[in-house]
Image 1 (cartoon, helix red, strand yellow):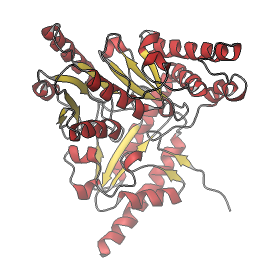
Image 2 (image 1 turned 180 degrees about the horizontal axis):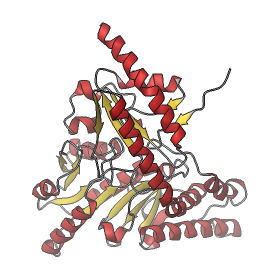
Image 3 (image 1 turned 90 degrees about the vertical axis):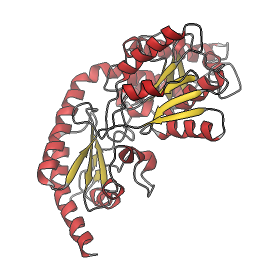
Image 4 (image 1 turned 90 degrees about the horizontal axis):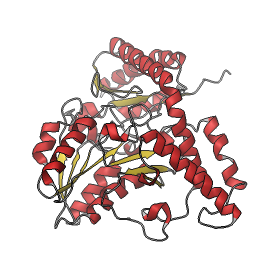
Length: 395
């Protein structure tokens, strides 16, 4: 029996570790294993690798080394950005603005602080394509607004947000405020940083979160850019590691891997264009061959690797199971919510009715995706949808 080739199209959930990244990490598990805080030669060797990784990350983001804080991943970076700013604020009751389509690492943190009565919160709606309105954002700003958190690009539908415009707005407001409470701008760039511009100065953000395992680096490592002068306090307590912003013995192997993955992003720009071409090919073929199908997200301003659809009359979970039986891995909404029965909060915010939202499938391509992989999806998916719709119509 010929084994079916497995096809992985869930790169927005996680990516495989690049072989060169793994090679860079390997010595730091059992050869260069010292604690970076130790003053002996073992510790100094680890410290040297840590410092080098921080410099490489700073170079990529066009910032200073002391503005990079390594974390356990994107979720911790988001939590540190939001709670660190709120607890570091001098406002009597800080106001935080975010959008309804943020990753739960942001949404749940803001909702938690609001429930506890620590903050006042505003959750911005989006248009049918999942885009935040800068005008709506400007209207939501109050004298006690201390933080705006809007993601760079959405993990479910791929829509890219107007980050630079928001950055310009925040700068103008801070000019007007003068010495009063400064307004900070945070972006969760976990999905975007591997494909979109990452120059901090060009983006105009004060805080930026990213995660290693979305860019062919290891899991369990991420970072938070914190612009110099940003009033932020630690949310974990212990030692003085990570410039006294994030205590705990550093994950040197993970940090080295993260830096190696970051360094490879620039050399992958041509592959990003190939990924975009494959994504467009996939979108065109699915819309042409499967009737009653809706492409979700912005038709133009979207990540080059994400194609998300809603198929009328079928359940996303059933599609996923059938695709998996055919050796194809995809997802329904985001990986973090794929086990939930309620429709995606992102699709709901875009105005997609629950019955249609339940038929959502996200294909997220990567640098190892081939045209043969996409051709296989185009071959397999139409009969799966047809079969499931036929079964569904019986009941």
